[in-house]
Length: 270
Image 1 (cartoon, rainbow, N blue to C red):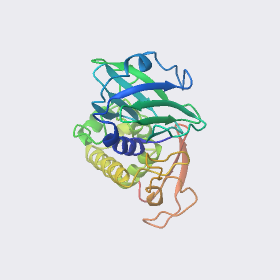
Image 2 (tube, rainbow, N blue to C red; image 1 turned 60 degrees about the vertical axis):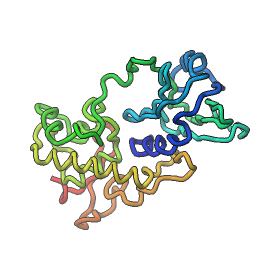
Image 3 (cartoon, rainbow, N blue to C red; image 1 turned 120 degrees about the vertical axis):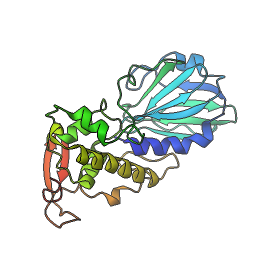
Image 4 (tube, rainbow, N blue to C red; image 1 turned 90 degrees about the vertical axis):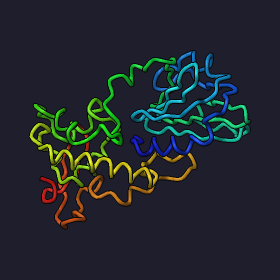
């Protein structure tokens, strides 16, 4: 599934093509994706000017005066800005046409993505209980330390809890824990404030670098310009079970944590 850097890469790629453009119309080629598409998408978006395109966790929001279209790419979704006469392909489920003749097209083969509606001045229920953004200033070691007190869950599970911090999925949690030197099996409540500061710094560095590199190349993910991300070749632990640690040379270890594959170095991560 595309993680935060992939979604942020998509947002940045779309922004210059969408902001301040007026929506001409909406074409829905099916009534639902993961969930039914609300009637407001067809009724209220046409005629609206796109004021901003924002990311909240792994959701993208197209903001207009009437409200916001809330999009999630799911496992295989992609968004492209295309000429208005571009032929429709299989799985091109939604077109949002613009007054300049182009269109924003949502393609989603597996239909695990979504297109929902958030009225102006409200927060959609999927976004209400989310934790802070990992790249914001209020996400730091003190915050993680306070939220972790009394938690017996493994630190990797804690870090991937969207109520704690959004957008740190399996790939980036594994890489951040490696950078911070923390064993992913350690109980969250037994990690010191200083080590949490190293972890918060690692999360920011790993995610920031991944964004500049275009995200991680996942099997189904491509960026808005059709190019894959380039971060995968730099992964130090994720997906490298059976290989040796690039830092110390010892064999990497493997376990399933919360039904998610986890690879770490028993020597470098304590």
